[in-house]
Amino acid sequence: MRLVFIGVILLLIELYAFQAVKTITKERWILIAYQVVSFLAFVYILYGFSQFDRKVGQNAQSLFTIGLFLLMLVPKLLVAVILLGEDVYRMFATIIAYFTQTDSIAEAIPSRRKFISQIALGIAAIPLTSLLYGMTKGKYNYKVIRQTLFFPDLPESFDGMTITQISDVHSGSFDNPEKIEYAIDLVNQQQSDLVLFTGDIVNTHATEMHPWIDTFRKIHTPKFGKYSVLGNHDYGEYVDWPSQSAKEENFKAIKDLYRQIDFKLLLNENVKIKQGDEEIALIGVENWGVKFKQAGDLNKASEGIKKEDFKILMSHDPSHWDAEVQHHENHYHLTLSGHTHGLQFGIEIPGVIRWSPVQYVYKQWAGAYQNLGRYIYVNRGFGFHAYPGRVGIWPEITVIQLKKGQIVA
Image (cartoon, rainbow, N blue to C red; front, side, top):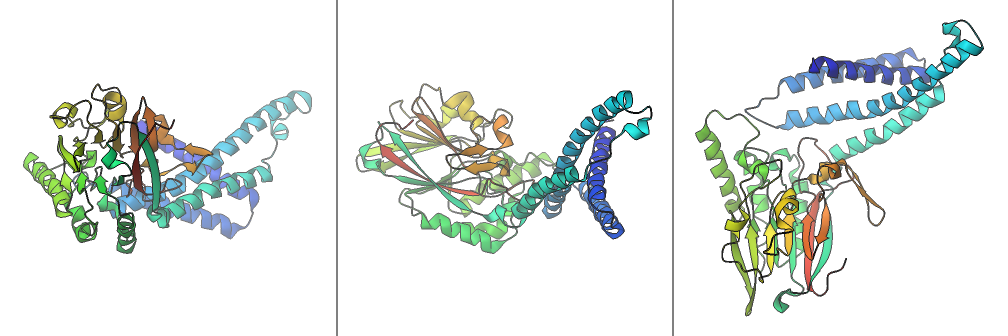
């Protein structure tokens, strides 16, 4: 029944979209071309979804299928909503006309207005072109985002320290080596003191990263090293495995990927970063999310760490900060997360607006947040997943500078 309901909704959306086209043109070849293109796209989408294999997970075909589905659905949905609004108006106009002007329902019904269909199609062109741009250009439109954070108890030796953060690589989605090389060059150009990778190196399988190992090994090892943690996708839990041992072997291979690209993987553990006679604690937990795998153990990861120590915590899912970290008695100064991707869709105009549908799921979804002197920074992600593109929320390389001083609200 659920599939029948979805099918009826999609059919109504398609009928409304066709009505809009039919209202603005009577050219037979245009109407036929529209129907043929829509039909072929629908057939391919059905075929693409039918070929999805839970044993394989996301691949190039499933990525394209999802992209095509959104290209067909979102613009037509906007058209349907606008024309549905017009139909509500037409219904009331019909009732009024029937009781005041004519006794014939047929004569009382006003015709669909051409300019409304033109407006609907014009508005629909915005998401259509945006989604196309996101799939062709936006997914590799890397941005270096800089953030300065102030801490009154930052050790003097670390005043001015810089951290480059990447997150959510999802290497199984990549299809352009030149663009990835460019992004790695951007990482190296920052010349930070510390490079941190906050999880999701693959979509599911360790083999997805194999073509990209040499590229990611080019990330320079800075003064204080390169460290990483696991993300939810690194556990291989979104496909069906032939056996538990196969899943465990894949997980072992994924953890080894971080070694192969010269990152030290922190598995519920910590390291001390020293500068002269002073030090800060870098803590890495396994994935912990309110609605995802909870393998992270903050207490275990913080063994040997004192409350007064300055702490940087890597935790892939920002819901961990909201649920446990921000009010923890150990006072974790800075948490670095990723996971949300900013949904790969939204609007960001600095100082004006920052919006994405993902904000209705995650309180902290992109950029810096502060509470009682404790910060979380949520990276928008390096790669992409599911929808093969990005619209408005671009792939991010974060550069954070730590400064000693009073917290800026």
